[in-house]
Length: 413
Image: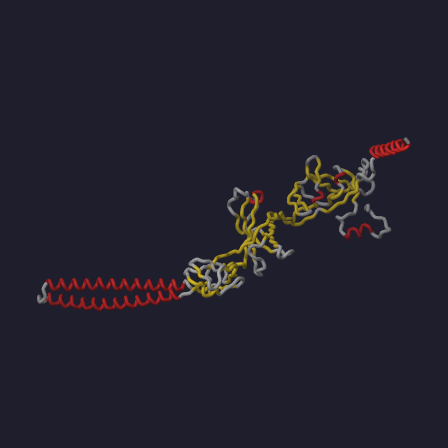
């Protein structure tokens, strides 16, 4: 019985303590609201004029501005590969050699056939000249009535036949000459050179697909060339940002390989369509790379300035409050009706523009002075305020207002 009585007394004591805490509350649970009409301690920040930018962050990939694969046009064994990964190659430089014995023999054969055709053409020219002289002689005799009409017809037919054979011989010469040129072109295919039209005179070998000694067919990739003097950044943007992009807008590019370093670029091309599957559009950037630090295939983080305003009216984001469903700021103004120097907070509805980090642009109305950044949740339009020193004050301001630790100040600590 004694134990049961003790337990009941303890439970009654706990219940009473809980009830007392519920009725009186905990003084530490929440800050007390200021008494009606009492000034509210606030922190303020000056309204500033500075440039603001509305930027968006995207992720994408860096690509080579130019990339092409070099392949031989002739089949055969790869005799020599003159370049390797990472080599810088000039325009027209030798890349590879394919065995050319068969193609060289084809050139010799075509050359010999051309010489034969030229000899036949020379022989037919001589025969044609003889036929022409014979025709002239018969015509002269026929004019003197020594040769008959039959003799003239025979000489004419002989001349025309020789003339036709000579034209055939000349055509055969052209045919053999074309065959020789074709054989020489096929022989040149065994010598693979680096050729391109646009851009600078140098490219870098990006990949190697074959080694010397391999048997390759026509069109087999040997190496790839890339231009990394300037890279192409590729990002994909959603419809919300698509309409705000324009060619020429500046962009900042960063990669994991160089933390803390920012590379400059510009928007160069914007795709004229949004893909139905992703609802995104392709946007390309030109990223100069004179030091060749950036490489194709790197993951890129891109910041693009969609809009910028110079000399904008700027306040801290913390100064923007809502009253009666409207956004505004509390502007601190002197209280002319007070006996001692005092201030009041006037609520000014505003239209917010670009939000950049901890700052917000005020589009309307034009503001000047100081706005409340801390404590405005206790304010209404016209509330009396006491400006307290805080993080918004500069170190110089704190030295000027506080003075020595033992001296009284005009601001609350």
